[in-house]
Image (cartoon, rainbow, N blue to C red):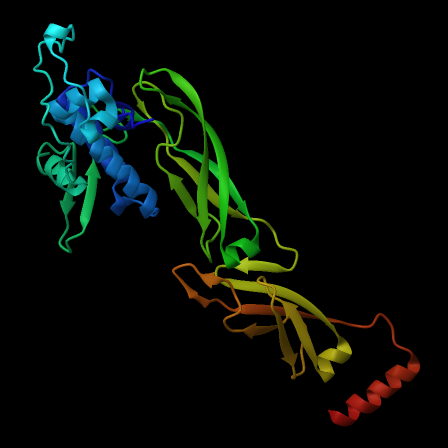
Length: 330
């Protein structure tokens, strides 16, 4: 089944040129690849939106699309029927039988539409460093009489510390109401893919633009997933550092011990204690903490908090030996 350009552009079949421009501006602001982390999805959406605008804003392309659909438009294989054969075009000229579909470049359309917007409703301006600076006063019901946007919907994305350490891809199934090309609601089930990056922290937000329910006269809400951390049985996170508690005996605190720890990615590391350890002592192991999200090649530190377990009682002979040994060494 071919694309429904009216549905893609979120307009009805009687949309005027101004309706098409308004809808294109709004959707292009949301889905332009420069504004989205998921470049593949946003680029595909942006191209579909641009193609829909290209077809519906061109009278000849729109006429052929309305009569023969996407396949007829792009292939040019449509039967030429005249008024004498009983087919009417609502006072329009019949399609040119020599028509060949020639799509316009998405970036050219974008530059043309936003370049002509001088009233401040929406625009893509260039900053001094040459990058696009997107602005809009209609996205959330501001000036210009734009549509009101529904409030964002936030959901908790609970993650294990191991997932935030190594990174993982999660699939989230959602159901939402959407409007078909005739404006009737239907339930749509979708699978959203979330690529959890190494080092993400509690509070990190992943936004899927306009994935809320569709309603007449309202821009759908953004769907936001907020990262939360499930408590770990061994490690506690402190920023990019990891904290672990270890207990040793009084004898080990005096004579030494090698700690053996299993990291969040399953490695075994050995940490030798060669000095006399006092209660509350902290051992710092560089580069064994959490990955730094902005540069996952770097890691925080592993901080080992050590507690000393004292014996509950000592015999008189043990006390004598301790006085003799420790007294002689003091």
